[in-house]
Image (cartoon, rainbow, N blue to C red; front, side, top):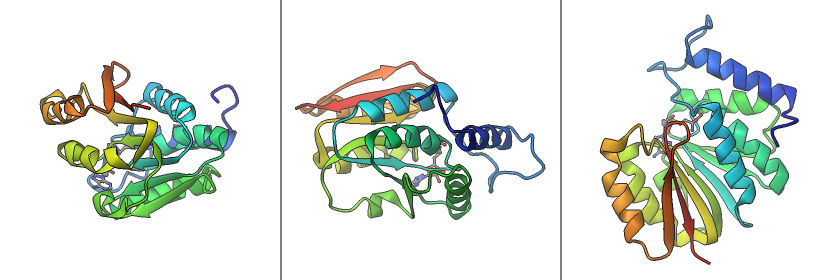
Length: 197
Ligand SMILES: C[S@@+](CC[C@H](N)C(=O)[O-])C[C@H]1O[C@@H](n2cnc3c(N)ncnc32)[C@H](O)[C@@H]1O
């Protein structure tokens, strides 16, 4: 996946990193930050998504589309489409531009709005990247856990950087008998959880 990253994807990754560092004439949509994952977390997510069982793949919190670009590499391998949710209109527009310019629009479908309402009733979720508001993580887990397929993988970002906000989320996952989890010290810290077979 990482040996032959298409040029258009690599160029857009570079652009989004420069945009978020404030190095370009144009700026990210208000309030001016994208809060995107670092490259090593992007690689970790792509590896986890590629290794997840068959089923739906979703991302909560698209921002400008940077993590989605990494996940698109796994979608290409899986022959799947990532559904990503973004509640902010400016960032949703930037993410859509990202998917067009990186030529991955066929691998990622963005839904604009609150993921809590948009996730819907369908089961069979095989991979989740949870990267929305940290205080919503426990509620998202409660909503997603019954919809996840056996062997399904959930990755939640900021498990270390936002340690103060994590105890309710960690407690919810650890109390669930069908999930095993561990915090992986990659990037800002990723909580990795797997649903039992
Ligand atoms: C940390 S950023 C995501 C960064 C992105 N995953 C990346 O690495 O490129 C979090 C994003 O989640 C969005 N968000 C927060 N709560 C949400 C919700 N309930 N539904 C959809 N998006 C949400 C925010 O607007 C913000 O753009």
